[in-house]
Image 1: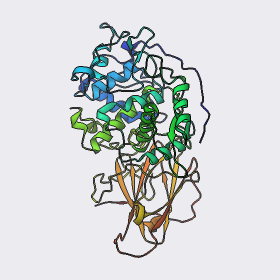
Image 2: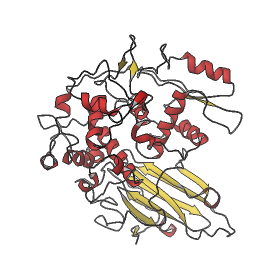
Image 3: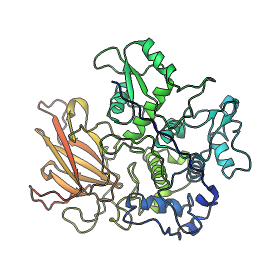
Image 4: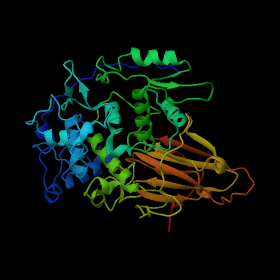
Amino acid sequence: MARSVRRCSLILSLCIALTLILPYVPAGAAAQVKFTDVDPTRDAWAYNSIYAMAQKGVLTGYEDGRFRPEQPVSKAEWTVMVARLFDKYRPNLNAAGTLRVPGYADVSRLHWAYKEITDMYDYSFPIGTYWLNWRGDLTFRPDAALTRLQLAQMLYGFFDNRLMDRRMSESDVCSVMQSFKDIPMQIYTDTDDYDDARKGDGRYTSNGGYSDDYGRVFVTLFMSKGADDCRFGTDEFSNMQATALTSLHANGIMTAKDLGYFRPLDKVTRAEAVTILERIYNYLRLNGWVNDYTTVDLSATLNGGGSGVPSGSGAGSGPSGGTGGWPAGSPGTGSSPVLNPGDADGATNFTVRDYFDENGTITKDLMKDGEIVTAVDIGDNKFLTINLKSKEKVDLHVLINGQVGFLKQEELPITLPVDGVQQVWLRTQLRDPKPNKVGDFTATLSVALSKEEPVKTKPSSKQPATKK
């Protein structure tokens, strides 16, 4: 399916880097920092992430006491924050032979981020990271403002590719790409047409490298043999870009908002960069990999781990929310209960594999195709209504800010207050999943978001039960 390519100019922001990210300070000193322009209500979605990072010395602010959360982050700033948080992760420093990058023409030894940049990026970072200039010199462009698309492309190469979800088939990747309304894609049935497309739009430079034009979103190309067939072709750029975008979206690290808009050309703000870093940290932690890359115990600063999930941006666990788990004011309680985030039976396996249609509905045969595992992007909404219908009894695990709640089907529909929460993760569980049982195991999960509290049609004072 063809989509138009949205083009706009990329404004490069020249930053005074030494005032944006000051030299490393001890955690004890950082814990005392207060930013005058970080508001616990307006910035609730990033509040806890910012202060968690500040407490660990991953970031500081300006000398005037401001953090400037809405200011674009540069590639150098991003790299320094990564290096501070993941203090054991130095791919290029430990690289050998042809994998090692010798240096960059535009990053001298006097550059404030020289060590972090040269220690970090080896040649395993294929797109979005470095380019050859017209003289054939390798360049990094350290002071360029990162776009969301460029950061997603860079993340393809981070952490030994562990952020990439290898469980997704090529067909799955194609399906998720089709859900993005502002990432153009094209499916070809003819290999010659496919080859002409990948060679003719400037994604490759004359010297064989990838384009450094980040004012463009290059079309992601797929091949097809007919109806219901969609797979990768020979264009490495398309394959890597599609894998990065869909994996980061599925794992809750960088997600599409507003009914499928990824906003690829938007600049990554400093607040967004911090929350993305926290999600990466938590994703690696939940998969048992974080100790491979850092000695920093970030969870100790997050209200007892209140945002320790892939969707954890700190929303709801700062001053404007509860103490972790369900937001303050959840149904049937005036405060947030302490829920157990580490239950058995796979309840905390929330890697997204199902996606809502335009009506906010997912229908699936749970016995044949597995449980529904999905996430809801909250945006600026304040209430989330959840319903689940099926002939067989199906219950629901709900993950908010690192805490797992359990809802029996009889408690649904239910409306949860989600003001300040960024994502809510949902996972079904058949109550009686006997393999030889005969029945209709089709379940329909539906959600609705609203800025005003919906009129209650089913009175209920039940609070999602804490799992024991």
